[in-house]
Amino acid sequence: MPLTLYTGPTGNGRKPLIFLKILNIPHDVHLFTWPAGDQLKQEWYLKLNPHGLIPTLVDGDLVLAESNAILQYLAETYDTEGKFSYKLATNPIEYWQQQKWLFYQATQFAGTLKSFNVYIGIKAEDKAFWGEILKEFTTTYQVLDDHLKENKWFVGDKFTFVDLAFAIGHHRRKEVSKRIGDEVSFKDYETKYPHVEEWYSRVLAVPGIEAGLELK
Amino acid sequence: MPLTLYTGPTGNGRKPLIFLKILNIPHDVHLFTWPAGDQLKQEWYLKLNPHGLIPTLVDGDLVLAESNAILQYLAETYDTEGKFSYKLATNPIEYWQQQKWLFYQATQFAGTLKSFNVYIGIKAEDKAFWGEILKEFTTTYQVLDDHLKENKWFVGDKFTFVDLAFAIGHHRRKEVSKRIGDEVSFKDYETKYPHVEEWYSRVLAVPGIEAGLELK
Image (tube, rainbow over all chains, first blue to last red; front, side, top):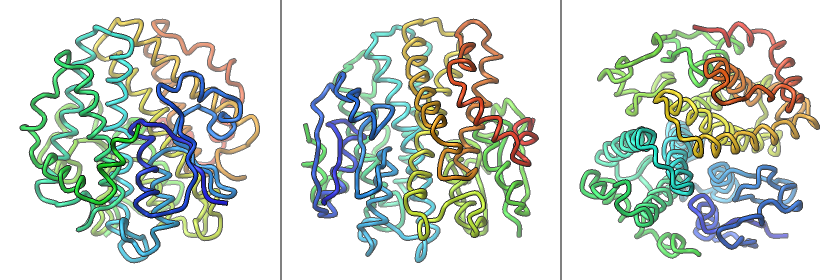
């Protein structure tokens, strides 16, 4: 039985779907329409993912949630030659940098972006909180820009699934920018963080990425 | 040269320090006093951790940030017999559940708790946002309680570093509760989520945990 991915057209939802396609792994997809509403609260789905989050991967006996954990699993299990990942046995330093960046992506990047989305969703007007989140996000972009000024890719000397995770986050951030318009401004990010933009162009040139990002 | 941990008395800061002690690994500690203020923005520290976050581990050539990545590294490198962790080679299902729970801990648990802290720090008064965060956090506690009703530990049948990560988060949540008092209420959490409390008692009985949680 091929593996099955339960997902939707969000940043985290696209991560494993794009990676499956790039790795050319046979798979079934259960794509929730968006916004998902109560679809994720159905009893059968909560058995796979008790919080009602996407994505979830089912591969034989394994039921795995958390998009970055799924990326790691796919890399470890199906990218055995290390085309898009580094292995602990042969490249321990790069392997642990992969882990570090994945957590940083999940917390400082995606986590902060999620706060924005919640904030926008409830049309909150607390400028102090808004400013605090934006300050944190700006630090994150500075860290990324400094790193990508010195490095072509996030880890080692090739495109890895860490670049995929951040590129999807970056794409998502651009989507949020469009939606919120001038209310809070990321408008100067493209000029303030040029090395992020240059790296993003390199990522978009990797076959399969650009089409995956537009998944609806 | 022994490994060196740069950390402070926060939830994430305590994670690797307690694990180092439990694993009985020789180590040096650079403990920042708290609140850290500009200490984390010193040039020498930003070279190790460009965002100015704690903790950071230096072990030979490896410089590793992100508390949960450090836990994984310590488990993989120094807990080779699997006393407090499961290994991919022998227990793949448990290994990947470890990964999943670590990301869940970093995002749904610690990430949400951080929003509370930012919120409290700036004395924000937006009740809609506050309510939205609390709703999310309540779902997370329900997920934990349901899981711990059926399972003695988070993964497999023994205490692992995943239990450590969540116990520190839970302890931190109790600290936040005390500080904010009635302003936002976690007061009924102890009765609403009894299996979390029972599990927490089991964790506190593991040698080295309780003393580590009180680290200042």
